[in-house]
Amino acid sequence: MKSFISCMFVVTTMLSQLVMADQVNLYSARKEALIKPLLDEFTQQTGISVNLVTGKADSLITRLKSEGKYSPADLLLTTDVGRLYRAKQQGLTQTISVSEAMMALPNNFRDEQGHWLGLSLHARPLMVSVDSVDAQTIANLEDLISPQWKGRVCMRSSSNIYNQSMVASLIAQLGESAAQEWVNGLVKNFARPPQGGDRDQIKAVAAGLCDVAIANTYYLAGMLSSKDETTQQQAKKINVIWPNQTGRGVHTNISGVALAKNAPNKDAATKLIDFLLSKESQLWYTTTNHEYPVLTDIAWSEILQSFGTFKAEQIRLGQLGELNAIAVQMMDRAGWK
Image 1 (cartoon, rainbow, N blue to C red):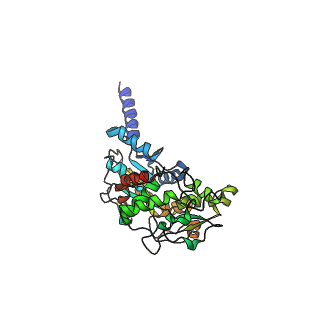
Image 2 (cartoon, rainbow, N blue to C red):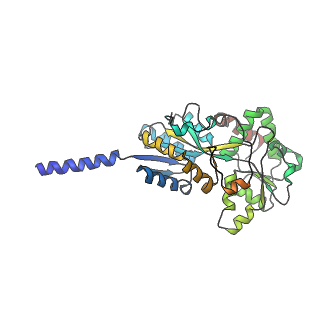
């Protein structure tokens, strides 16, 4: 009998240790290849395992909502502050306890109530044809509604959150009337119905289907660093133009992380956030993913440096989420499909 009780005690202890083992459950809209190496390094350094669930951002947010208080998720990692704002508004997140690592983050990359923070910066400039566009002919985003660009602009769909946030930023800075005028004018200058992703717009410019597109720089950088020769050659046909450099600056956004409302492993989740904000991780973001670091003392990758420096917008990032619905309505009125 004593032997049986001893065995049961050992088994119970082992099960308890398994249940209590440090872990983080991460819902990530980033592709596995863009985040898994960092997570593996975090586990190696801390002993904290990371259970990674990947999927489309909106699907992960829906999953969080449907799971409710029984959700195992600790963190939601996704691109675009608009999605982080959406998760917060649906009551799916909570305040993150501020650490020393988080204090080093510029205020604009943190939610005012502390529900989310940025991990990397995305810039969305103009991508123009080396052969058919003189860089001096475009100084501002507003120039794209000029008649000279009729039939020469490629854009992805209005359902894309990147474009929605870009329009929201214009609303915040120019007002609804001026923003609506710009959206109307841009749609009139489309070379084709919106289709595909950012890389498809870059490829369309390279192929001569249009002369200018708007895309995040990490897509172009990824093409330039591709092992596929054809992809590299397409990217080399593109010049990057930073608009509005004497004024408000180019539109920027973030990839960021939020702490799930019912996170069962808050302490371990905070440690992972700190790790993703470390210089080691920030350097990995820029050299591997070709995203701009959110910390100011991290050197950019050589490809990002080749695009040149830029002045970024200075608006409060939370506004991109707050004005999203108005932006979508505005795009719909203009016929931006």
